[in-house]
Length: 195
Image (tube, rainbow, N blue to C red; front, side, top):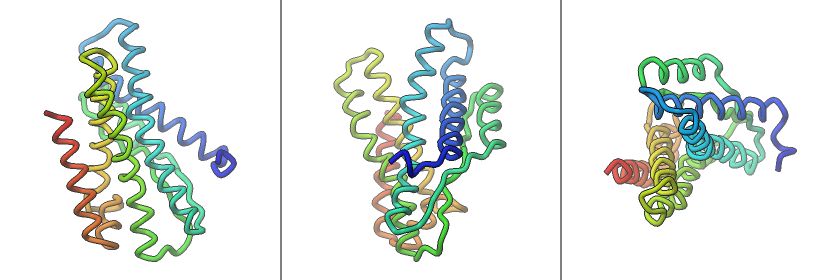
């Protein structure tokens, strides 16, 4: 599988993964924290936010490749910088780390399915994180589960918005029923994680 991810794309994914993890770590440690907690929140961000982001993008890539198209993630340095600076200065993460570009003339159905692959991956990732949250107790494992559930639901819900270049617009154009199911599931899981 790694042979299907060229070195430049691996580098872009790694840089975006680290930048997003740093941005979320800065959110968690606002107000100051000792080095042990910094390391904990950074590792937690790598596992929750980082994995959610990387697998979302790879889902698009491999769904496109299943249809015979080449697809590749490309980071957006400016947006990565904005994410880290906003987290540090304002305490908000607006992360648009880049996108997976599909090369070829995908049909509306193929484009919709390729776009749905990312949010579906995040919804599937909600399952193990919800299990950690529910059965991990009130300690660190439960916290990792809660954060992982919330982040994956948030990424899925955000990407399902039917605007601009987001996945939701392409899914809605392909199949309104699938759009409603994915959007409702994402929003429902996000609301549940916030309660």
